Image (cartoon, rainbow, N blue to C red; front, top):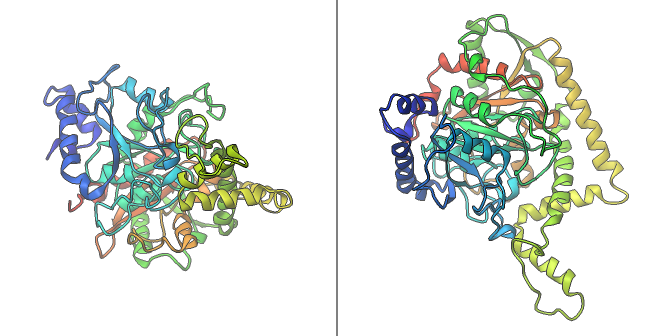
Length: 479
């Protein structure tokens, strides 16, 4: 097998045994990018020193990693795949980047994404869409579609994404890889360009569960520069990788298995449940009664926070600036308007308008405040469930990857593709997506596991036990 097709833990062992070198691994990944990225378009740019950088720090994990284009890297363009940040080069590293550099990882390049993480398909990028490595006519999911596609097509050993409403887990499901949204506060958001600050989390995308555990172990931890960072110890997640789920109590929420779910997805999830039952887990049907309000709540809270966060992009200090032709009346206001009109894409404008409306005078109480109250009810559903359960299992997405362009004219249909992932962000709990089968069209299907806050170890335990007893993580794309 080629070096770029191996996992990070396999490469770590080979490098430790002097059977290969970090430079050989880096070169194998770069060769793969040259060979296939013209078809996939997982990357928007490679790092300026991608072909020459050497591992730093203790070299614990000197393997190449793709970085979503909304995570700041010193001196490298970071644009959120938006024209509004054209030419912006951060003067500092995000905390997760600093930790990766200390581990010896190669920052191979910036991966494609929906503009400002606004989307579920990676079609809303100023650089054009990313394509799914399993079928190039299909989307890779979003908004971290470039990161998931890079890992699935072996153009990266692992990758970082961000998850605001499912943006790590849904593309992981669509691309047949492992993706985890950590508990809110487990990973520092310092250096992550904000979409919705009370929902965003950086997380790992990897080829298998062990790699996912290793990467989370590197990036997790308290950061005094992030006021929402949790000052809690980070366990050794690899100790949770045991092929044993005996005695675990797992819930199956009836609200996630209703009309709209693809029968092939339902069948794959039922088969996954059977695998875990045979390994000793006990399953219970449960109710999360406020699930039906999750999508509406999310698109009130998230767009309101997006509207506020994106108000800073005005063309004054950095990024794009467009001067109006006629500056006789209100030159400053006209510059703001021209810049924002030219800089933001249609989905960004849609979310800014939705958020501004729900925050506006006379509507704040009816929309945003009510949304926050319903968010509390959704969190309380999970709190109550986890008093008796160790984990909850659901599909990651109601369907497999859809065709490029299929939903671009129907925003509501696009928004509903995240229907199973949104609740975890609203509740702040951790959730992981792992491969659990394929459709008849050979498109990946994802299994989602949710656990109580800061119990990522439980996610890894269940995911690893399932993975070790199924073949799905060993499948390779046809590229």
